[in-house]
Length: 236
Ligand SMILES: Nc1nc2c(nc(Br)n2[C@@H]2O[C@H](CO)[C@@H](O)[C@H]2O)c(=O)[nH]1
Image 1 (cartoon, rainbow, N blue to C red):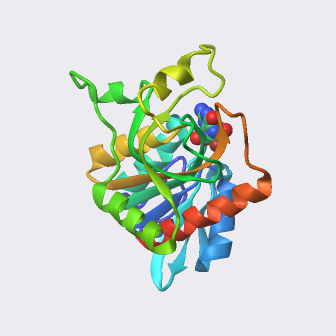
Image 2: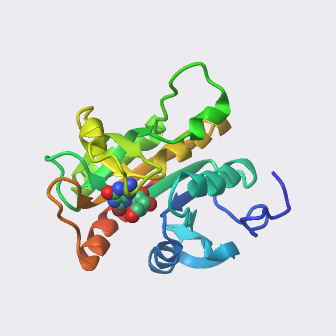
């Protein structure tokens, strides 16, 4: 564990808890810290990618933005796992639904994360790597959701490098494989965790639907996010 800050994170050794919640938006990280954590303190603000540490029900927990896309989350999660001794990172994000049975505000948990990214090629594997969630975290999230009466849908998600895809059929192809939703970060987080021997989980609120073209209002995004937060905070 290095004591020197990285080019992307000015926190000192020990500033992060063993568990870090990671929304994409740093302003969401600020909101979470100020709303849910006791005694939150900012530990990094390099390039306004804010990170905070506080406690929840007496347990230490951190929250830090990861940005949009696998390159960004790839940097921040790699450093948290490998330079700051973080044991588990839980991505709390939003996604677009690919399946008709999904409704806006549903909470989806990515048991696996497919990707169209090159990120996996760095490992030089002679085949197809399966980026998967940590089972213990997944299981605890599902049990917690049951206790809280929140319906969660568990399955495959797609971490795409492209938001505006030139290929009009791409969603149909992934949908035909039963992929639940599209986002842009989980696969890199799962690969970093696998390589570092650490734990990761991706939980997503469905904020838009790629087939019904519905999307959440700002206030509904906030409401749906709260249910996911109540699950994630219990996983510290
Ligand atoms: N590629 C993609 N990303 C999505 C979508 N809906 C949402 Br919310 N996202 C997530 O939101 C950001 C893009 O708007 C990225 O960080 C994605 O993880 C979608 O329909 N497609």
